[in-house]
Length: 460
Image (tube, rainbow, N blue to C red; front, side, top):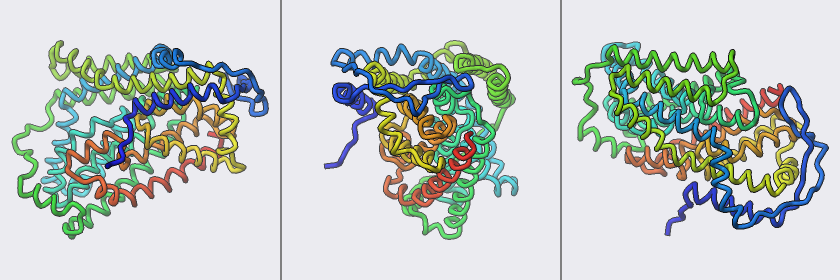
């Protein structure tokens, strides 16, 4: 009998029930907060016991509903942005751009040499800017046959869209679904610290490119060394990717991509110069979705239906956010959050700030195995990790980065629906994939530990 973990919703509701039970056992406690640079921070020396308020069955059942109400702004933001990007995807402009680059491979030596770096960078940018995640799954159907046609293997074909987008998501600098939400919850200015995050993204993406290029060249020299050699031989016999009948990028596609790029520039300008928060950013992406839909000559009904479908796909994420906020509500009403922080602080604290940040990253990596929704995990953990950062002497900005790095394990964990879905589509066994991923995962681990040290030491 196979061990099967419960799904995310059951798991978080179980956490809700455990917190409700804990409110009857854990003594209440409270820290004094003080205003520093316009933000409330905990005074580490101010902890004092207070009377707890145990939460019963009624409070447990109402917690998700209250979670929807309290997290309404974040939920509205996620649904709006999800709908807007569904319209962008519907235009076909991104698909057309990828196929145009793939076709140029046959005619340009520069493109041939730069094909892997170009595509990995594009998908990583998608993860780093608009939170490309599940959207990478359909691209497996393009890149597996493309990789086989170029003399690589199925693993390379899967890695380009999947690993590329996942490393961009974890090392994001403008991703509204993880950086934006986590910073908003932590009380950190939205998309602040972008210079260091850009460096993190470049290094993480560069490490991915170097590893995949090394592996791809190795397989091209000797295809039999591929873990998926037998599968690849079957796929090659079945036929490859047909790009001959495709007309390439049109003027409409270029206009759509230009509008998308303009929206990203406007988002950066709005955040940096005008102090935009998630409601203004959501409005911007709503405008982008409408503009790209009509630029692609989609009719009104199609734009609306696609937007609603994209928002509907994120209802599950909204439910995770509400449940996660419910855990905070129960613990807050019972006055046990500060007690938990007081108990957890010695485990994370270190005389070397970098070690504290690294411990926080390892905790987030473990949590990611069970809760791998980037937005949901931010909603669940940042209310605890942000004040914990105050207690252990690292900045909340560093705590957000540690949370992001926890997502680096997503490409190999079996509890991730994206991972399982991608591998099922490519017909690659999970164990085969994990054995291949382990060296790259070790690189990510070393990189995360190293990149958390400077901001922890500088008080970033």
